[in-house]
Image (cartoon, rainbow, N blue to C red; front, side, top):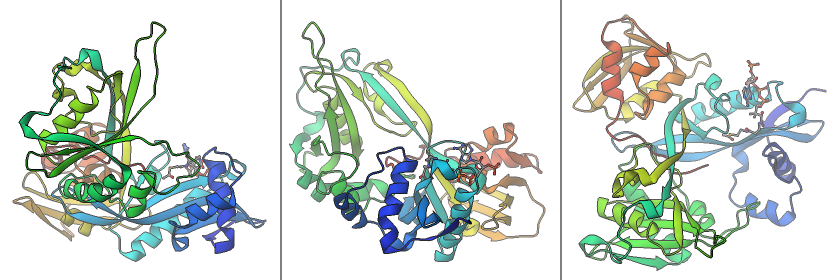
Length: 414
Ligand SMILES: CC(=O)SCCNC(=O)CCNC(=O)[C@H](O)C(C)(C)COP(=O)(O)OP(=O)(O)OC[C@H]1O[C@@H](n2cnc3c(N)ncnc32)[C@H](O)[C@@H]1OP(=O)(O)O
């Protein structure tokens, strides 16, 4: 019997959810209540699966996303998520088929980029995705920070207030938009994101536990930052507090708010350890502490992967750190973004157009994705043999043009 891959129908939704749970090693019994609550925010037209004798054995879903690129433009992207193949059907090419169909759909919709968070590193490079924004998570040893625990108020006249989830739903989206307008790598959050992350909508199969939310307001009363954290209520044998506060979200639009919110989380009584959550590799956190060594790297890894689908539009959407004139030979086995292009950057802006001139650099579309948000270094990629230089100096030119002063940051798992 052949296994077919195709968009799913309404009646196939519960079976699709069961296959998703199976692939993610979660209990595969889906209640009607769970199916109903998940259906409310999933677009059937963007869900596909593989079916063997009527049973769903693979899942694939996409949704519309906007991603901030260097310079602040928000580019429409196809976000790929909930990719699974059941263990009975693995390594028979089902993901490859779903991905080929999914990327063709994204190209047809006119999206210049596709994005995803990779569960495992080796899966997505073959489909033209490159690791584009890494994350770092720190564990802060609070007693070692050197922060003055007696100090109660933020410097500079601002204040921090604990708020409810409902307040976060009011304040958070505008704050996030302000930050996303200038921090490349950030992806859009829709209403469902805010509801799900403040307890207003269930998030099966994960049970909701209410966290603490705090807002930083400037001396003028303007909200400039927001932190959400949870604590684990742990005590040592000698009755000493050993709580870990885990930051679920911390966004700030001014340096004062960023400093005040980190100092706040690191000064909550009974909290001896702070887990930072996923931050940019160059996050300020360690250096906001009197003793930066109190922040130990817990995780440093690739996180957001980008797949360029339209080279001209993608390269023209972002800004560049240095002037460059480069002929790029982009190799794309899937045929979406390949070709030879002249990229000319001046005053930060770029023009990009197909050309027949001799190439300066040859690179796979995967490496273009890795370079795109400014995280990867062309010099490193070249040293790794992933980029071929045909004109002396072209690698260095690409390196200074593509790399960004701040590293990209995608705080959201999707
Ligand atoms: C965006 C997200 O949703 S991330 C979540 C991804 N999902 C998971 O990790 C859940 C558990 N894993 C799975 O469901 C499956 O193993 C999948 C989806 C990762 C792969 O599905 P499959 O149908 O087995 O992949 P498919 O057969 O199309 O493999 C294509 C190629 O990728 C390789 N490949 C697939 N998965 C992996 C992997 N995890 N590690 C290394 N190589 C892999 C295959 O070996 C094959 O290589 P080849 O072309 O050289 O023979």
